[in-house]
View 1: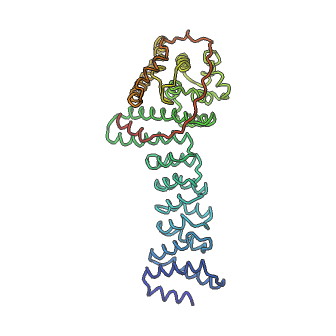
View 2: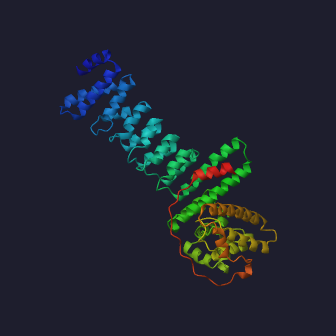
View 3: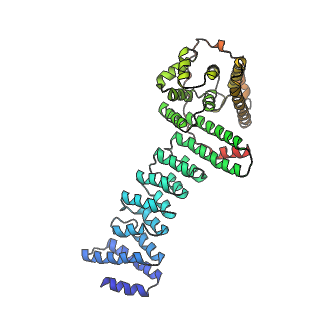
Length: 427
């Protein structure tokens, strides 16, 4: 009887009137003290609204039931499978949808529905992983910005692999306090891919130069990110990721030494040689000894660069880093390594010398910029006064072991992708 009266009323009512009726009936269903029979009849009428051709009616029904624990489950589930603008209302708020149902919705949700699901508070990790794997970039941005959504490292990696070229996604991910260091390096690589595509389309520079600029930007970011690591475990995790992604290169290894980041160099030797970090730590601190040569070879590093590596470690040990920005290349360390390598070079260090010259150019440009920004424009001069620039030869390496400097206090760090992009465009 109730359904027959409803149908008669619906046939003569406007969509706006039907929407008001759906809202009123839904509120009455949720609030009124009624018999089971009355609730069943009301639920039947509410169910009939699901077939209403007017979007405004179904939307009103979704708004009335979305946040209710007592809402009819089958109606909420049907609304979650409606048009995206209707589904978004219940996907964002309904407390009665199960994890399995949310997973099912995530496989088909699109547009505002996918965004609403990604923004859902206390989103299950399984649903978050599925969104990371299948959703479009708008939903991924919403997911990255959802502090209540736990994201596994694998899920973050897929987000970057699929849509890392989107600047808004990179920015959203970088705001997460739980973002792994490896993901920060991946974000830099994604930014470089996006900018490389832009530059290549406009034929601003050659592909080889683009690759080199991208590699150098990734290396700089890796050094800076490593500088923020909280302990050896995080540094080892970063190095393993760099190795697995093919980014643990000789260029990065030498950059780490010449930037004073010996921790990253030690972690690289540990990972590459499969040697306990405690043993690596002790061996590298006595790099003059034969044990270091054995560890170096076990790591698979080039024999021709062993002497150059020792020269770089000695120069880094004797440097004064107090006047340099953290994780930056030192002009004077590079000068001394260049001098030492030039003295022993018989041709097998030519490629390394080219790399060192590039490092020198980069370091001098940074020092000049810093001198212009700092009140004491003589920062570079002060560093030079505190550093002995006499040629460093292999025979200068002896058994004298100065005390190890205290580990500098860690500081918070955010990857400045905008600056990297600007540098690529200006190159």
